[in-house]
Amino acid sequence: MISTSFPPWYPGMLAALVSPGYLFYYLILLSGSIYGYTKFNRLSRAFKFLVILVSLITISETISRILAYTITLTVPVYHFLIPLQIIGYTLIFKELFLSKNIQKAIIGIGFFVLITSISKSIVSGLGSFPSLNITVLSLQLILSSLYLFYQIVQNPTERNIFNISQFWLAVGTLVFYAGTFTIFTLSEYIILKGYQMPEWKEPLLTILNYILYGSYFVSFYLESRNPQAEHEIHK
Image (tube, rainbow, N blue to C red; front, side):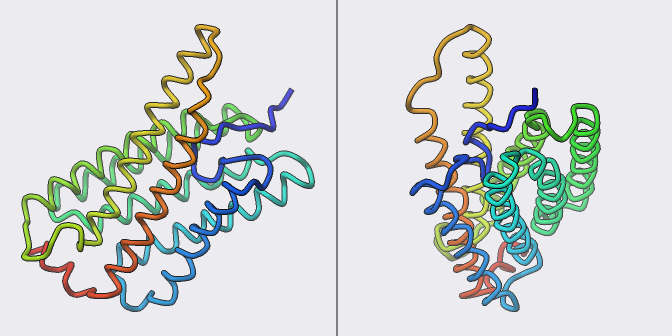
């Protein structure tokens, strides 16, 4: 039997029904997309890619809600979304990294993660939850975010770090994917042991979604206010 339910730890998988928490999450997504496009010409290439990625996630959310109310099967949407996320994040971090060798490395890692994700979807089928796909994507983004933090620290500017758009992109990405990866791994262990899921899991994961896209919104705002300032980091 194909499972039509999914855990609310992955972007967009907050609930099968449109709850107040989900509506708030969707509002953050939609607001980020709209604001990003209104400031699109003022953004650097990396943040233009991020706006496009957030918009694709917003569209996938809309499609998943329609499918939830029509055929009650939403999982296939994420099998198509995850490869787009892998490509999008690879392009984003490739644009942000200064080292040519690191740029080549992130492209290589992205290609490996993409092939792994597509292969898993083909083998497991579109009706299965893409847990491995998300796991490898999470590992890629945890490493990418950590290196971006390192790069920011190694290339200080006169501005406060909280006024740097790259900082907020790294914060949101690292907090969400490190947090959800940890919770997902812990959840698998709890299930294998036959224990009941803790009640704090879903509220915590919902908050992580808010942090992710809230941080992206802040990064769009800072980047659009002073797009040339980000080049200070590249000196």
